[in-house]
Image 1 (cartoon, rainbow, N blue to C red):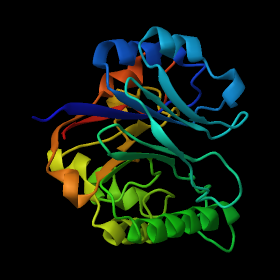
Image 2 (image 1 turned 60 degrees about the vertical axis):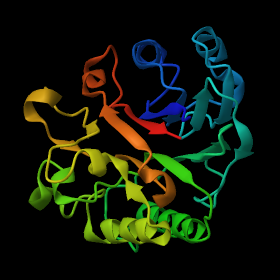
Image 3 (image 1 turned 30 degrees about the vertical axis):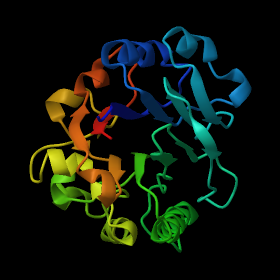
Image 4 (image 1 turned 180 degrees about the vertical axis):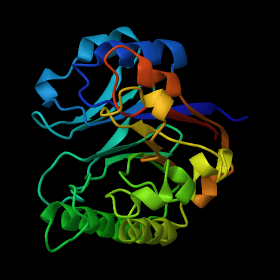
Length: 264
């Protein structure tokens, strides 16, 4: 007998400022586990009561004042508080746990990388590539079935952006970032579940800039958020969903949630 579990991921861009739309998402979609990125809150100030009231009684936090921050909120016990400093500077960009069925879930927030795609001129871009290299070394040694989710801040495929030509020199879609992400994927033979369920070149975006007067009309999106699975469990994925309407909710994040269901 198998038990299906649903894991969701969302860069919320401040969990306290957007708590109402997180609550709405949890009421409407009720994933077993929610992984948040860019929570922007220290652990002591996290809004525990709201999640407790919705049944998310297990929580792991890796917070930071005003910046970054990741959290895992779960209806299921979270075992093994795992955290890696892939940024190598103490920034709160990863939290992971083992679920009762043995599955490892790793929640990551890859640095955006600044505006200039040049490691000599932009230290933030160099840090982003180094972060991916550390993740790649970790992936190469990974032996257990794992689901890695989060804001990778890279749209790898031509169909992952509104215009491949226009964005080739824009951080998040440059060839060097795509190459680094491909090496990360190859290190563990990760399976990109988003594109397994919505094959390229079908439209699949998870982020739209706040700068657009009407994000939906211009639809200048990018697929920056990902859910990847170890080869051993990729075929257990039975459903993948993005909640594009969430880009219109209240004071929205510029990212939207995505979910995957696994029959394990």
